[in-house]
Length: 325
Image (cartoon, rainbow, N blue to C red; front, side, top):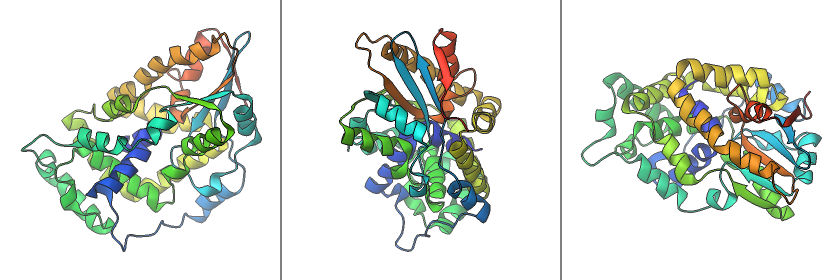
């Protein structure tokens, strides 16, 4: 899997804000004759039509409180709802819901300008000079095939262009950030009047996105362009595993792959953030008001020895899988 596809699944802001930034700037705007989403293969259609989705869900408890950990997929289809009853029950039991970003920040009109400011190349630099001739040629061909205005990428860093490529392919598959599990549960929490919060800020997520070195950025864009032809198969596989709650399969495709191929990026977007979130989740468990909570984060953050599930288990809490098929 390309590193930008992994980022889009690990950082909520990468999916939604990248799409929104494209609405406010010419970078990701679609031409009037842009292609409609491609129809999924029969096998992929069967994978997302034949059963109610059962996302990764764990309960973490101490003597008086419970925190539910729910693995999100940040871009989904309308056909991915409703979810399994276990998810509805966890949501109903929780007095408060925490997301990677607070709902107020997710909805803030300042996020797109912040993202574009972070993605801007320094004065005197342009995208073409930041890339190898081979990667530039691939980008020219991709932009022509997808109807993207290449000139509007000129002052943008490669990491953001790579995200645009991944988000363009997601949209062609019909996977929509506005249908992502985070957005779905934010709307439900608002309707139910539940307290909500964020585990980190938009500025922190943007800093994680903007932390790649120039070499990593060029590699990320080249990978996104090279793998665009296989992107649908990769993402449908991940999507099907998310629907089944296949922890081992998701860990193999996301966590294990990133640790081997992109260890520094894995450390920044997964390990460091999990470690920063751990005390905040523990505080929910230690809350003297005895409120139960639902924590909704990208599925990668719950998996492997570096995931929140393992980290909380190491702290001595009772951790149990909920609703597994």
